[in-house]
Length: 324
Ligand code: ADP
Ligand code: MG
Image (cartoon, rainbow, N blue to C red; front, top):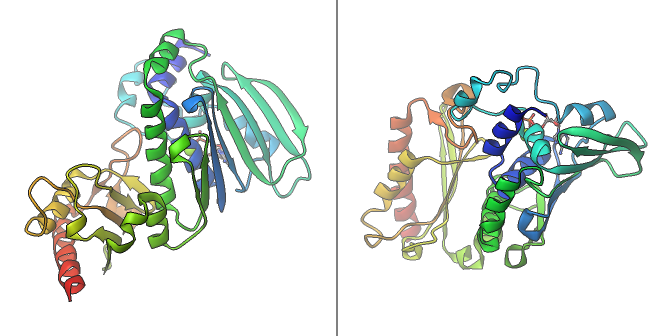
């Protein structure tokens, strides 16, 4: 692959946690109801994700690693713009250019699946294989072909890497409570989460301490709906509060809406503490703009000021009815 490709992939694939995130999102996109993540060597040796989603035909499996025809990487000048644009359709290509990849996949229409091995972004072998419907993708030896980046990754603490992996796993698991997830090979972060209600999933990720700490919230209008749970004011923390916004089942960062939450809690929690919150927005795509960040975690809302006010009054109402 070209140097431009590798440079760009290096920017896009900063660490194993990114691979975990992208593979998990692909499993969800494929309609999986069960997803398992296995980590070896803090993700540097291997990240493997297995799902029971729709799988890929032999042709689709090969195509999955090619940059889309509209690739933003065709022109070297485009490299600058990449930092501000989305990377849709490029995750597997980027991963395959910095990892050795093994893929096993089968669609329900075929008796036999496909096993692909990819190295240096090239297909090294493609053979028929017996396997269940769904996909297992194993990304091994990240940055094996770029010694500088490999050293950089190895210099990080394994506990930092595993913490980052956990964060990505937690976001996807919280966004999809009806899907069962398992995380293995991470030591203290290992988890097995059956399909469940939202509340059970939040407790599964956030810990049993949350089971008596969650106040439900619900709001519905023609513009958007908001549901989820917020922490009781007494459970606010100086550090380590769990704070999540999701839009249409994807995690997002939203500093402005975070301010709305903080304003609602202002008189209820000690200065310098932070509340837990797990807030899920459902909003028609035409009311948001998701293409402003490469990892698609920043979303701009049309009419954000109105939603800001809605959040403040929704949360205040939730406290007062909870106190009754
Ligand atoms: P994107 O998800 O943005 O389309 P990716 O590079 O992540 O781009 O994936 C490329 C394509 O490979 C997907 O569009 C999908 O068709 C296929 N694919 C990837 N992972 C899976 C999976 N787990 N199950 C089924 N198809 C998959
Ligand atoms: Mg993807």
